[in-house]
Length: 318
Ligand code: SAM
Ligand code: DTB
Ligand code: SF4
Image (cartoon, rainbow, N blue to C red; front, side):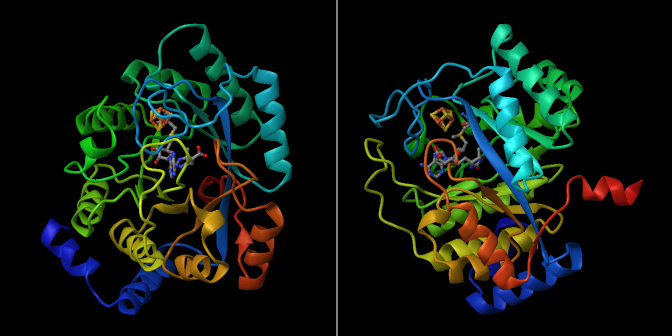
């Protein structure tokens, strides 16, 4: 859809939008299933990018313990725990502006091999990368690469100045050329306008191919970051973005990411109705807290939703 059509969609009455999104969701997915993913920060803090929201940027002043790259065995032990807790996708995040070839990257490739051989979907988010690096990740068994556009191209330099929107799009193209699924979404609540949210949805849904997974983050205001005092966004805007994302990207997993801890179970249920079908589980995201396992499992049980089995689509195809 073009910008005008998406604007018309976005501005519809909220419940009409949720109703339509629910229909699209049910036509393309099993609405009784939720994909559970676990995140692990494999290298924390000290990042040279200046993302205004991020606890890990050196240009912010968040109270954070920096950590060097974890050992492969420790990461695989965490992946095993995540699998036992019902996760089917394990995502490893490093606070790097870009991937550099060398021993650290070789170690990440070992981690990917290990996670993938456990039967988990392996995902990484390591900053910018080249096509060659993406191919090496693919060979190691990577399923998906997370690289968000975060907001509109127009608003981007109000949030991040050390890289451009074009840089982001280039990495996404490298990921797709290597045959890796792209996990690409944004953050709401950065102080962006309605037009910025519409523009982000326009760019995301016109990527070719469309992202396999679309994380929708709600800003977690971290003390010491430039955006710590950003005014909270009305939760219905969050629902609206989820519904429009579902309608525009019918096949994608729409993933509720950061910010869930502060969102009521009723609003999360409405988000599931509007087409969200993946969550991050585990008590921590990368550096900020996430709802506890009991909250998530109780919520899913109350709603009659089950955790999705691993590699389901491939099994069906086989
Ligand atoms: N360094 C890599 C990168 O920027 O692509 C990967 C890690 S980064 C933490 C992954 C995503 O987390 C960001 O693109 C952003 O959307 C989200 N994020 C980071 N800090 C956040 C916060 N305080 N609140 C909400 N989302 C956040
Ligand atoms: C994404 O879009 N959200 C996740 C995942 N991709 C890597 C990360 C959320 C991080 C939230 C802030 C933190 O915990 O530091
Ligand atoms: Fe670095 Fe990623 Fe945080 Fe930006 S979002 S400062 S690139 S870790």
